Image (cartoon, rainbow, N blue to C red; front, side, top):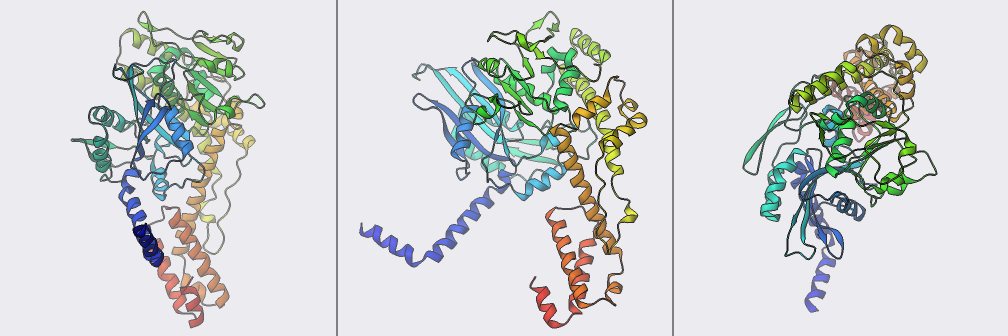
Length: 559
């Protein structure tokens, strides 16, 4: 008790020193894992406890702060549900909401500026990649060893390297791997990196937005393999339109692997357009958003959900589009093609595989492509080649759809000659849907796509979707930033000192403050301003301030 009292007194007499040391310790922790956190949020180990059920056994690094809600979500999403019957090793993925108030890093903004949409970091969701092992074990009461290794990261290839080694060497292995990753340089889109991990050198190149679509390969794939589409080939156009329009869509699959891969393949099918709706590669009844998505008091939200529990068939009967997948079996040389069925037939838990929807496509399907791919299956063409053909088709259809939008959006940008040094930059003209539709006759998708149909009807519906809203906001933001860059460059090229000769002190101070504000904003947004512009403007500001009376110099130098 005396020792305890003495330590309390010591703390009370050196609070300032303690606070300093504590703050220094926190900063040291953050700095230590700064590189690690640019690749992974954390590594989790989830096990099955007879009394608690799924339980979080380990989180590494240990100072990573996860809320109780996040921990619970990770536990439930890291195990296949009882209907999947997964024995051996199973890999799948999930996406879950982050708790409100979590702060993203500035590094993420810089990375996202150059990364393709499928590899951009999200500020509101975690991606989890799971390696689940279930094997018979007589020493365990339940009769099975059940454990999952989970990486909260965008870079799922790391899981295949780390997980097998972890299950052999357990916790010390994770500590070693995490320390190795903390020595890696930060991920930079477009740059090839050699990364040492577990005795091997992992050579990767993260794609960049400036890459030619379908160009340079990478060890970290941006688009998931599309093999799972081959049982739905004849309905490919329907699936593409449903995703493009952000329609509510449920995937009921036989396993978390099929569920998550199908959802990710669907979401990436409209690349390079970003899918701006919610999507959950693997979703369970324990998810915190379960009630939100299953309420019948309002229309289903724009979300793609992947599930494995047949219970969802009844729960989501009111949803307009449901895909029930069976086991991936071959009928002869060809995958059995699922049929489009009426929603009224979706009643029982043993509902047959099929696409349950009343949706009618706006654009006709590509029969030549379907015939080519089916023939490729018969001739046992490698799946990589088949996927490449399918991916190229989806890319070409999406680009044919986007190009007219991009062309029209570019026409809304003010002319460069209208940007002057002494006036606020002109505004970007608003997007006028009727004006855009009028351009389609001479510059529509028919110029680059052989597909026929009601493209105008598809655009009209697209304008009401979250995907259009997300695309428009991003393009408008990029154009506004381009205007800011142009304005700074025009100011830099102007005769700034000559302008000040006949101006009052109030006007000069106002210009200095506004110019500083513009430069601060440009730095915060990491704008691509021409080399030398910022330095020249800084020199101008210093020269102007030095020509002012001392009291104003003091005021401006303390700003």
